[in-house]
Image (cartoon, rainbow, N blue to C red):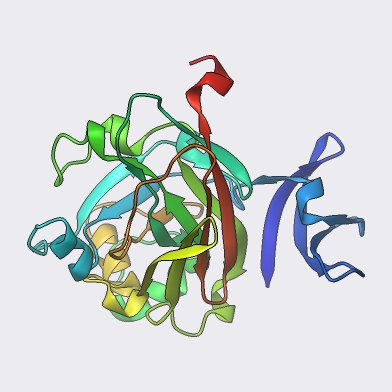
Length: 256
């Protein structure tokens, strides 16, 4: 099952995928109304609680940045204001030189996890979605401890479009990821190349903190990130989870 949250006609609705008669992608609201994908405002598919993000969780990505693999996961937290829905826009500050996407598998916790063993970890997952977690390298102070301006910018973490039920994802440890910038393939990888996989992350995190329903784990990005500019359209894809679209806009649109 795939579910989204969209705003339409002054209210927030749950929605499912629906192909339109003309072949275009659309959504069907729970009240039965059907709309084209671009006729609704997409929200993150869940109202997230704690957002837990991983850095350098792919060996090739760590090598790309000239860093050795971590002995244990590199984890940092993000605020809820960072989240943005499918088809939304993300600001690029005027003065920055290098801003890049990060296509990631997002894991949504479905029930309380505390001291969970690896073999039981996936029982605590509600579902999966795609994340595009933008970063601005100009602001990076320490690769091992990303600072707030890099990873906690308003609207700089796109999440969605769907929450795909965990039962519909046979193996979260073998999903291909791809990113396109203006239609050109610029990043590709597979979740099998994670240093710490999804069960390992849940086991690790729940060993010292309680994971609750609605918590989101962003599992890191593979190699292949490139600079993005104002006007660029970025699409992130993960097998079985759909495609997540986003556009880069200038600060001046927001009076910045």
